[in-house]
Length: 455
Image (tube, rainbow, N blue to C red):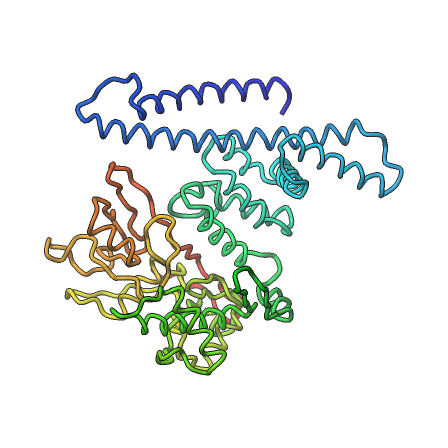
């Protein structure tokens, strides 16, 4: 970006700031045309201003990226030729120190920002363009920098295009990347990266499993952290079993929160071999396995509910060993989606609840990361109002957002066989819900199998 482009960008920002100022004036009771509902107009103005400011922050971040990358390139060009590796390192340190002082941040933070700016400027053009347009935030851009790190240029470009180019083959479905909260976008980007990484997940899993540690870290106030780096099936099984035991302890006389109960149950199991008075419960974890992968014809990853892609060998082991805590779900070999389960009565059976978990993945409220096993199956249109118990009239919100639906004007929108409902706010705004990322399965190479041409 040259000097004239920078000036043009700043002038465009000034126009945007003026637009935001109009919203602020409306939202704070400044001069504005009085409508039929002043309070609603006030609320809408505040939300419009927040939305505009969010886009403006993204565009400002894009401008900072251009300026940082431009400074680093220019500083390197005007510096004396490096006589040795030590001189080159010193020059890089000087650039980092200058940016750190200009931004009033630590040198570590400045070094990370310069690295991200270089990545966005040279390797992720779609991400930088989306940032300039304000359609993704700086946090989303950082996620793409992180998740493309270590990939070759072609793989990085494919990951970026999957989420930011609607015309890319197999582009991401559902709400755009910028409409996902950054944590959920990171989960989807990481899952796609795992499935399409040029090095097989089997090889990467074997390498990582060799480094599994148990770590103890003293903390403040007489507390400490205890963490274990485990294979995903073991970690998911422990987490869900602990959650089930913790929930069994809840009752009218129990004052501990679910989070506290999980910690107490875990400590009691490890120290005493009992779960603080709770029965040892096995909580089922869904494992979605492509049929050809289960048969050993391909090495396509399976999907562990609440985690993401896992090696096919791990899924085959769970199935062959008859692990009762893991429920096997085979996917349709045509499109990668599980089969629908029907029901005509009000009561929602266990099989349909499991289908909801497959379709929704977690609570369908935008940004919610709760994939607890006891999310509450709920009718979108109440049974008493004529709503049926088909999959398109059901969702599985967490207790918090189930309560939100029944106690406030928030309402879930339409759902389909494959997509969870979005939500409509009290102001009438529609917020899309995240969708599962089912993909067509990998077909084995002939002569083992071949896809049928039959409809």
